[in-house]
Length: 99
Image 1 (cartoon, helix red, strand yellow):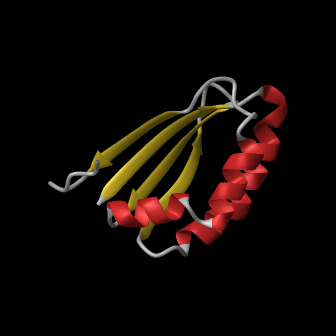
Image 2 (image 1 turned 180 degrees about the vertical axis):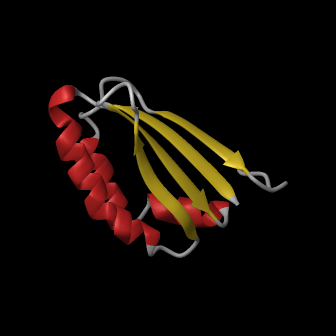
């Protein structure tokens, strides 16, 4: 299993638009082969900060996910909406080498 944790800090004027865009892709992503979890959590202290939690069966499933048309479109649309670069951490929950 591959676990991905992403911390996002959005520009204040883009937060609600971002959440709306995420809610559009979330059900699509959850139907992707190999996706066990894909959920966005708001920060309780900062309305512009979110944590994305993903769980994938294999690294190949994660890699395929990142290349899907809906994700390419999502990344292109939201790339300028962040206050700072995303903090992305990828963990292997098995002995499998990811990279």
